[in-house]
Length: 182
Image 1 (cartoon, rainbow, N blue to C red):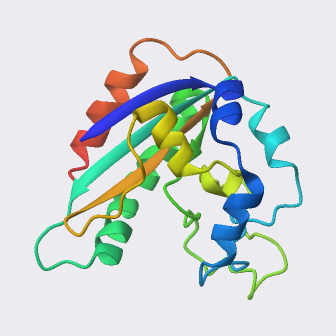
Image 2 (image 1 turned 30 degrees about the vertical axis):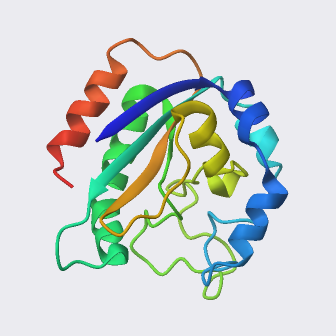
């Protein structure tokens, strides 16, 4: 199930921008400081977000197939969703927001291996890597808290937009997402 929200960037920042809190969550992740799309960034995330006018956010809940681990299902879903987001960002003149850290290049683009990201033109960020508290955002704009359930996963992703998208954007995005059959 998909739920979409088109949110002005300033409203998103006012309601859910908590970079220090989110950084604390990131530091507890075993992959912290390994991926170039994750904090700490060498730029101001607030300034980065303010380059855009809107965020089109997708809350995507998926039933976990029986016998599949959540982590495996999450990664297999991402292998289908991430390329679609990258394809659509050119069409929508937007920047994709991934549901988690960037895996867009197929090399081991790890901070542990390379001094710089191998493909900065492919690197994309998640909302949380830009300082957005996903729980606060979900409560403010979707009227639900972030939940971790045994039988489903929830992915949060979308686009940063420079201008108001055409009315058809949500229908096209929804159609494309349904076609990948996560």
